Length: 96
Image (cartoon, rainbow, N blue to C red; front, side, top):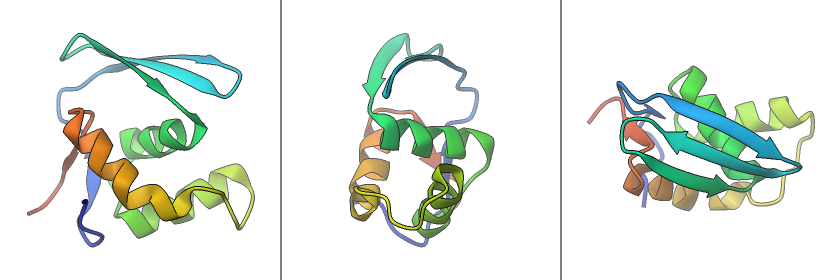
């Protein structure tokens, strides 16, 4: 599980290519050659971390602002989502 006080960002030297279809997203990781299929929440989180490092709490706040709503289904799953994105090599911690 991802630590809540740790900042996360798209892994250094990782370039992502994006395609979207309705609320489904395909992300190609140029560094690994892997293609990932993301839902809307995962895509929003990854896009936010591509722009700037964030803790899980900051990430939740940014997603709320981006979506323009206070309550987004699935935000409680953000720690698990961040852990999955880390396991896939799409993000990395910015500090120990």
